[in-house]
Amino acid sequence: MRIEDFRFDLPAGLIAQVPLPRRSASRLLTLDGATGAWADRWVQDLPSLLDAGDLLVFNDTRVVPARIHGVKPTGGRVEMLFERGAGGREAWVQLRASKGFKDGAKFATAGGAVRVLGRDEDLWRVELPQEALAFFEQHGETPLPPYIGRAADASDRERYQAVFARERGAVAAPTASLHFDAELLAALAARGVGHAFVTLHVGAGTFQPVRTANLEDHRMHAERVTVPHAVCEAAARARAAGKRVVAVGTTVARALESAAAAGVLTPFAGETRIFIYPGYRFRAVDALLTNFHLPESTLLMMVSAFAGREHVLAAYAHAVAAQYRFFSYGDAMFMTPAAGARMGGGSA
Image (tube, rainbow, N blue to C red; front, side, top):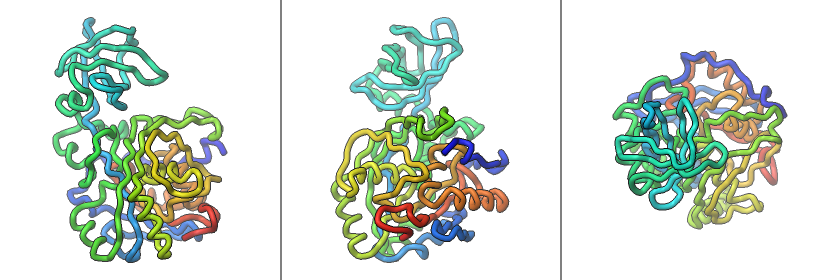
């Protein structure tokens, strides 16, 4: 397949710039991957779409205030974006400046001097004035996505974070989780819907475009994943009872499918570069809740693999016509798989 197979027109005015006042007040477009049928709903309707015994799997990663601005000795401005820790005071980061950096170069920040140690592809290894996560927590700002055309403010520290976020390490939010508040979680519990947590620390690479014409030539960025034994047991119990494993977001889908690469969901801890696009057959996910994704992005390719490219693009065209809100602070979709999208059969 080619990248242009995942192109669609999106008016800039539909890109959500701020969150709604209430997390669970977003719209929800449901998509039946087997038939292509869609319906306009609300996120608050989610409990009615699930059965007692279904298992919701969330990503409990916590967004680090990962963006820090600095100044070179020459006066040039620097923007540093945390990617992941490299032990102690060292970290892998993205650096942006009018000119490049040499090994050993330093630049000033509000928290002290940062020294450049070296480079590996798009990332720079730096030495910070203090332990990496502590440094960014103290001096960084919320790293809003590039399509949000405003500076982060104090409210983003709370709203660009899931209510159950706990494991520090992400530089972008698992945005499907942003729709859940205490009221919705209580309604799901009253319905008898179970829940479990994986951790996938979303990296800045999630916003990187596909740079190859053919999808088969694209290499995914690495992200750190933990799928605990308890999640595998809960998923096995749900499926044994004829219930569904519902991934809350593409990050959870990536985590579960990485842990099920051998065909069975097993505990996993490490890095994943899994790239899911049409033709892939899902092993661990029976339904998917997700936000709307960028044209030609790997995330759009993943959901197209799950519910069918034609069905997804038709649903997106409806969402544009109906003026759904797109991307991180936008509305959501609940989708079930296309025939043949899952190992061992068609739709759930």
